[in-house]
Length: 363
Image: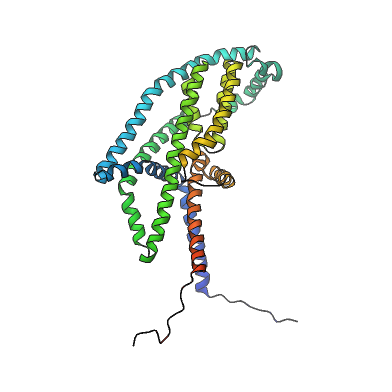
């Protein structure tokens, strides 16, 4: 019979392991509780990277960083306000027109007329909704319980988020280079050139993606609005805004926008719906094969598989914001991995020399 073996652990080792596990659990809990703030910080970081090239341009022309940041920040706010002043009145008018048109759509639906009449004729959708209302009430069907309170909280949270992100972006533009230099200063001096190169590559990757994605989404929204106006489809500006916002989402965003806009086009006329489908198919080919390579250039080079996996993981972790930030994060990780592989390969090809012998030492 084999002798029993006993493994002894020192109490200090056990306490160390327990302390590490507790520390990890506390850090994860803090990250989970403050995930909204972390999302705001990431959004501000992406915006700061998108605006920083303009700041650097002014600094190279002789301005100090403070005035350069002020000019770029105020200019960005003025551009946003100008776009809002141009589109918001039209958007409000179109939303009101849509609200006024809804009763007519509902009447056609209940009587089985118009383009939505098939829902009642073939699927008896009105009777099913009526039965659901009788069983659980309007709030149970549409989720309208405490709607006013929820809407108010959402508006307040949105205002707080916008103001906070704006100030975070301003402070990052002002203090970002100084903080980066402090981080480099914590590293050994012989390692600083390597990590400066890595930091520069990450900055180009993330900044190029953010500014490129914004530009491509703006192009998508403008071209869609023009096509909708030419076809005479109602709510063209509002639908163009929907296309621009959804086009920011990688992979699925443009398809979702195409489905929504094409459905509204079919409600207007069959010809408009077919033309919109053809337009979105052609535009997606143009965006994927011409605009994205042209705008992104060499800043973001990820395989489609990595993009898909990163977007799915980001969407699962943080919803739409996670999907938006997935590609920059994946690009940054790719830069770090490539640098690590290059450094490792260089060490294999050029190993350090043998340690000095006694004869090599000075007398």
